[in-house]
Length: 278
Image (cartoon, rainbow, N blue to C red; front, side, top):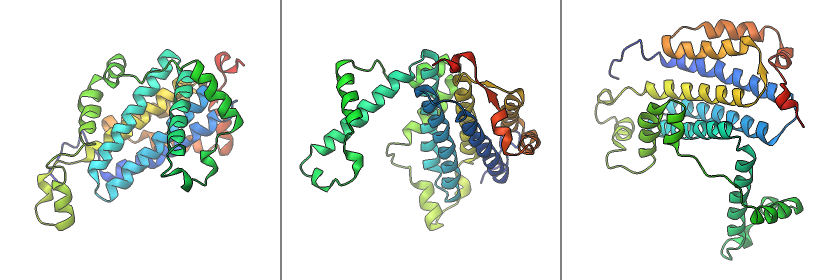
């Protein structure tokens, strides 16, 4: 691969080490959130964080098979969820989003059930509406959910992260659709006919995916309304410092947290007056 400035990118092994510890930390945050009563808002936040952790894992697995193109597509999906989570948090639209999601998923199930070419093949209970779901869809058909998917560009601007849209979301979105030269690198990788060093160093996708996963975790934790201990915030900052400078203080911080054992989970955060409301 072409040489890159070491001040900007770190080794593959360092990024993989980061991902291992970051994912473990993220899972600890999920367990901490699960200590409190589940609400529509908390469930959506937890699910967004969990989805981002799995997508980050997916980026690294795709990297291992040299599928850099699809790494970028997963990165685009992560950005989409970051922008959605910010929109939900800023405008407190969690309930509306939950209702809208239910309606969209119901419509898809109904469309398949109504198709005579396919419905005879449906055997799973997944396709059968429960009495509660029937009541809910009737209510939502009368009172349409007040949710509209946000403009990624508008949310990025509001977050003061416009470059994430211009050079991240927008670029990665272009890779979702076919391009005439999109398989050039894949051809070289598969056939060994050509020089792979002529292509760009793709470590930027590892760096950026780690960054966005960290942003989603931070956004979700802030939106949760829980009061997080200072050492949790310090840990998040240590993750960010690694991506900026390569410093590995996050390893020491994480070892210090985990040395407390499983009981540390219940000590990570406390319920605020907001989350304690019925």
